[in-house]
Length: 231
Image (cartoon, rainbow, N blue to C red; front, side):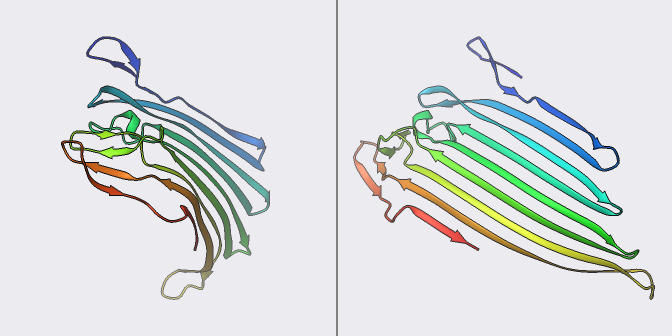
């Protein structure tokens, strides 16, 4: 969609094209569905140094593959990929472009589901799901980060690179029970999962100044800057 500025001129503010297709690859046995969406948006903010733009861009790809190996056996494969980026993340009235970071995230999700009928009364559903998300936050420079009464100065104080991963697997057995005071469905199953978060963080001092420019407080960060956790 276009944007009309007060001072004249036309700028593109948002663009969201989409594309999709679906159909059988092997008649009665294999089906494919694919959808892709691209998104780009720009927002204008009035800051202490004038009007500045921030933008969000990225795309999402969704792929689904369904297969019937035979009989009542059904297998589904799903893949979702979503990279996104935000320029001047956190831009505000008192935080102009030089003082805020850029942000990038990439998410990949893969899942496989298997369903099979066991006889005429029972079904077994099993699944495996793997997801990985990477986040990267980068500062625009290395100038001291200063928070004052009227505005923020310098460059953002933190650079961050973080990756989170999760693996999950499970199975559920469902069976119809004999009619006894109505119809009953009995289910039993189990799910296990494992998650990790790793990253590197580099933080510089944050300075708070008084209205006359003198230093009021200064925060410094210690430690190795790396982290690794699992659950």
